Amino acid sequence: MIILSCYEHLLVNCQVENKSYAEELGLYLYICAEIVIEGAQKVPFFYLIILNKVVEHKIAEVLELLFKEEDYNDCFLVEIKESPDRSKLEVFIESDSTLTLGKCQKISRYLEKHIEENRWLPEKYLLEVSSPGVGNPLVLKRQYLKNIGRMIEVQLNDGDQKKGNLTEVTEDQIIVVKAAKGKGKKKQEEKVYNIDFNQIKMAIIKVSF
View 1 (cartoon, rainbow, N blue to C red):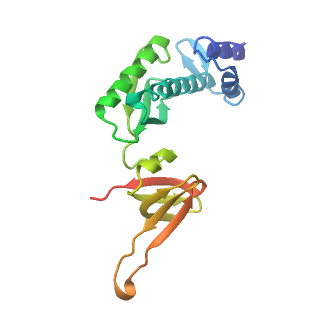
View 2 (cartoon, rainbow, N blue to C red):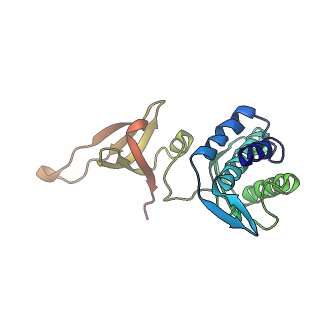
View 3 (cartoon, one colour):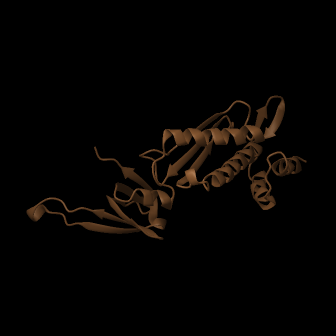
């Protein structure tokens, strides 16, 4: 059966040691039905989705090990994006200090070694390791902490928008201060916004020139 063969591939060929994780990925077997053609063989589309998820899981695991080392313990994984055809893998990394080009290159070589030794991707693939860059939405609390003191624009779930200086990050919320401006009758007083993380739809750091 195709279900059994996919499950065995996860546990053996894709080196998924965690059986419960493989079973969780197996849920795709029941919700994806699209069929694609790979050469002369019909391959269920969900099979490709599962492989993508496995690769992302394995990449996160090896990066977690790397980031325990002294030279990399200020780094953290933000996001992994893999193209549907598995030909391109983008790994977005941040650092509590400065993420240099040299460090990105070392991390890229480290990942290439694991990818090629374990054959997680096809023979021809493109790997890109970089920081998310200014203008991309903040994903992790650790990113908010790194950007304390900078201007931030926050879109809330209710459609409201807040903009100001990110002054503090607590366990459950961020504090944004909109500075007073204007003079006399037109003066706008300073405003302080306490925004819970679960209220945030999207937050972006704004760069002033």
